[in-house]
Length: 350
Image (cartoon, rainbow, N blue to C red; front, top):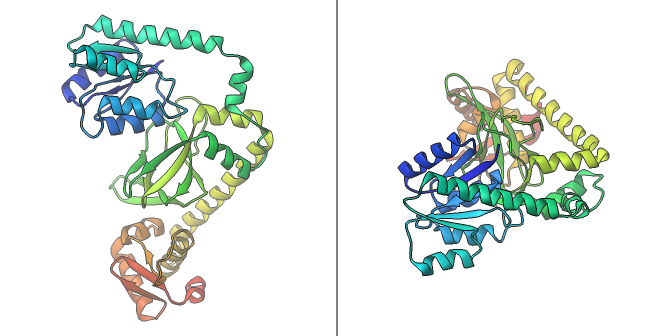
């Protein structure tokens, strides 16, 4: 099923057009403004982009200009959909590299025909590409180690920025990308039936996250959220599959990395199930200390809710335990900051 990205700020028109495309057996991804549209294009890599011109945040011309500079999106067919009918407006869009231009109101057949025409053209051009060139687009050299794979991602993946608290993907969403963190910290987490959050992993710079089955139609089984402003590089699931198929040594190394991650997750679950409240709290503080950067005073900025989620306890219970650690001189606390005063003793708590 071909995927269409529809970027339109009018909610009624966006919903109606999306429904029209879905009835024509397209998979539809929507975005309500240009800025969100650029991000969606990089994540979903649609077969065709249909984009309004007059929008908040970033207009259609800006969307096309940004995507035309990205290696992964520069060749995606782009169709403008707009009420602007002046010749200079049409000429401007086409000069920027648009493939087609439809004016509102439009006929259903006009939109479908424009999309089908762009898809056919893209298919023909792809058939004309040499197999050697296609192979080099996937793999420039033999990738044997995780370090080489990280360099490959840095060179060939797509950089995406997320603000603190911004959702990267959500539970139940289709798996599109696997991520390497260039800067910042990301947490993965689940919600129980009562809406209580449980943090399943914390990842910082130079670490991977987002791995799931590489089979078709797989979904994410947890949420991922930026704990601070983060820069990620993502690799498309299909590209990752090709890299692993062509580099068996890398696949084995990656299995080792994932096995270590699974072992850490099991240890966290055992601590949550059988550890004392004091041990779980101390262990969680030390986990965050390994992941977070200290400020110039040695403080760690940690939300109490995040600590409680990793430890698997109520926030109120965690706060009481932190207060006892403070009285014992193990930590110092001020606002959301925690400073470890006696790391060795915290590590010996049982």
